[in-house]
Image (cartoon, rainbow over all chains, first blue to last red; front, side):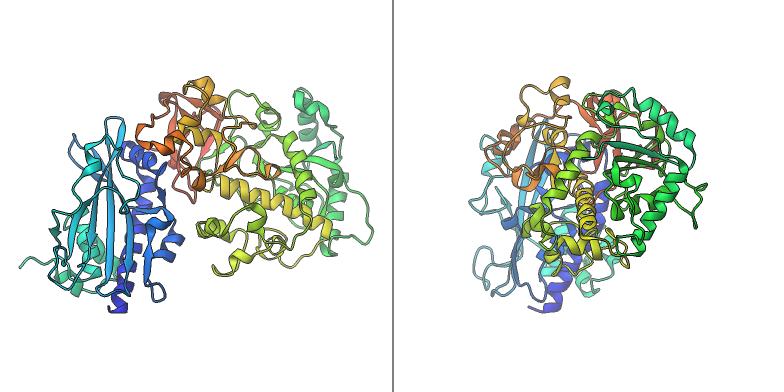
Length: 213
Length: 381
């Protein structure tokens, strides 16, 4: 793995975190109700702690769930029935492994009636050299931030037993940086690439992956 | 323990007016209200200046009014004080804190006559332990439990604060110990602190910051003694007792993220309430003696003005119903108002966004008539 790409991956997450952290503080209304509600159970990781936990030249492996702190990104407004969705994110990575292990877990919090429910997904790098069911950049459903860990939803909820193995949706990515970009595009659409461009730390070559032929 | 309440200004009418009015506050009856002339005030500030120039001991040492003050109210504007240079109440607060045995210091009128700071930052750099407008010197909410109307939640109860300060001075047997260990913050908690929370107590790098001692905080951080000044060991203990407490109150508790107090805690985990979330039950948490849960409590009770708990460990405690089953949690139907220290129905509250190093910045105020809420743009549209 090219060490500079690992650093760009971290810079990308940090840049989006700074912007969205500020946006969340200014958020009001139903979206803020949702944020405050989820904060009671999922700690919003501080900026300093995030910098320390993201991959770097000296940190090849990490698991955010081990410290039970989460990255929050700005809420997404769906239609009037679904309301707001708030992305709560955890990362697990090991860049010393071959193939590289990289997992972005996201739980989209949503108010359903008076209750919070989560729609969980994991974005993952290929898990093998090419023959396996998941040997490509992909997205799957999840029941919790860790296998055999606490569930995102109550046991009585249908969402607590979503299928975790298949389907495995193919992702337009060819490395950690494009995987992270694909993750953000999945949440916020192609226009988010313009926001990422403003960050100025992502070389143009990574944007090529998302150019429609 | 000192029993004197001093009200100091550069004109004596201010002092006599407030002395008279304070006599009607029941909790003040246990204190004395001596008259201090402007001349004596001026002379005694001169002694503090001599102490400051001479490492905490003046060449012609004498007892000052500050040394016998349990509570010092000092007006910010001291332009008529006959001393060299431009004196402010903030400078007097610094001198009294670092070079006298003064008890609790209340800065008066530095930030307005009757104001509510919507940033909730609480002026941590001020050497006054609390800053108020002159009209609130006699506010019962500053003196005793049970109040009505304007009463910012971060205010301490002054009689309790006087006692707690002296207990803290006694607690501090050694200033050369780890500040964070003394406060009860392990490495994980220190590493989770935002930069500006750490910066208040240390100028060291992130790697070295956890080793900061209490003495280094008061001598090197810039938020204790001015860096070119020295004071006696006894005065250093008093500086540490006051400034460290302010850091805990304003930075660890103010954000309700490292530490959380009872009214903010029960809005997140209502199952801790003893009963249904009625106004009476909720308002019972907005007192200074609340005992919701024994575990995770910040045990240095003299170092904080109200009971508080470590949020990070508490929120993962499966003995709490709302932690074990977060999905069934029912929202509290009232909001806690930071300006009146009580719960109110949502339609009586105005939402604002505080400027705190914490995700818990959404707060509420009742908006009391006659109070200046600043900066007003922090109110939500």
